Length: 280
Image (cartoon, rainbow, N blue to C red):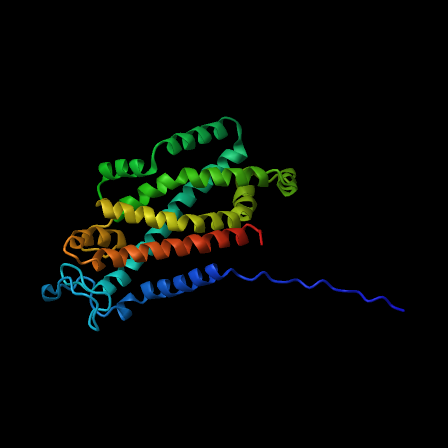
């Protein structure tokens, strides 16, 4: 009698409900930002003083601010800045952080010690204070804020990349390429850094929500986006004065948008980091 061979069935892990909801929400926010000119009922800078601080209505689904500007239109256009700026910030941090981390892990010795001490010093200096110092020197604006926060996030990415690169550089394939006479720069560029890509990408997804919140904070303080921008952080700052008049929507609408997007990116980011890191 022939024994039956049972083939193990691989069961795919079900995606958590929270991740599905957060991903669905982001799946609506991102296209809405791209299609803002088509979806927004008004121009974001269209002023109508006769409709100042109007509540929700068929003509203004989310109400208006003190200048009569439609909040729905401003939030849709503001999503562009609020989503693109963190991407640029993390691109700057990734370019510098990955370079420093891989260089420190590969060269070791005094190079590793110097990079480690440099990142420790930057860690000891409060990131927001460091950013404000750079803005004080080079002036306010979203471009300066993105570059300043990119530098502030660089030590975080560098330390994470260094720990990954130390482990990766000890693997047999690295020694094999060295024996073949391949230079260190070429090994790192063609093999080591690409092998770190999934883990670094997952880590950057986790940092996206924090980067968005940091940029919104700078805009709220007056260091980031400047009027007449529809940046969400700036909208909260502008709507704050309306709260004392009993109008909550000008500050509540962009504040809620920031909170929902940050929480959604954190939820999706943690799940994506686990998947990209190879942990199911």
